[in-house]
Length: 308
Image (cartoon, rainbow, N blue to C red; front, side, top):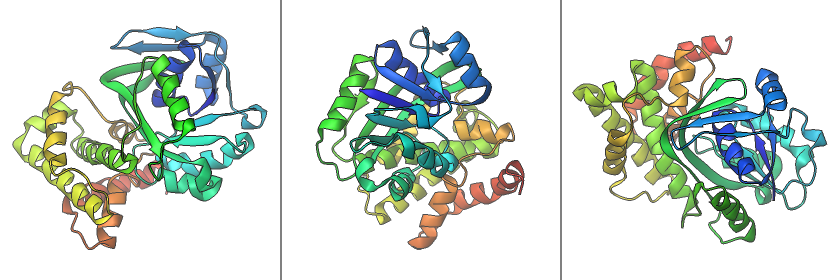
């Protein structure tokens, strides 16, 4: 397969690097000094599971020159999805399919609106990583994995082919029985730890060990769980308890990417994470006081970061 990684940052750089290192045909869509570093020096990945590098790297910022694409993995920030979808159009063949690996739950519908539902799968990934320097990805925590599937959960040859690519690359990969449940289970976790981490400005260790913020974490998870049920997403009864237990297993220094962006004064995924839960809660008349507090507390800085 020819796999395009749209967004070669902390997520795309890691998973695209693993695929390319295993011999898959991979094209990275990147920009700026990160792109230049990859083109000149290749891609370096520093990982708790073992370092590796890829050189040469097939990378460009011009999607009009990329041909015969089988799959596109969308690895940009959630607020960049619409722009990414428009840039994907020149690469789109009749059989090309697109898999979003964003943190939110709205990416598949946003992509489908621009690219057509027949071209879109749903997906997610699990990893804690960052760009340490141009052309250098650092994987710091969480055993990396990728999960994806057809929007209607039907078996398909294209999803199986992509699964086999990740298997050959040694990446944990799954096509779950219900991709929507899987996406919401990830969203349950990431929206809570991102928001509470961004408000407290500390890593997971300190905020999970403080009784008051641990209670906030539990309540944030419960709010998201209630919204998911209202959406018709059948999350398991033990989802909140299991997520709390999972948070306790992570290294104490772990930070979500949204938290890092906010702390660094950059635009973040606030709207697609805590903001989305607030919006959906209002839609279904479900109270979301913790997520509302997080969202409203962080919104002034988010507007400032966006120049508003």
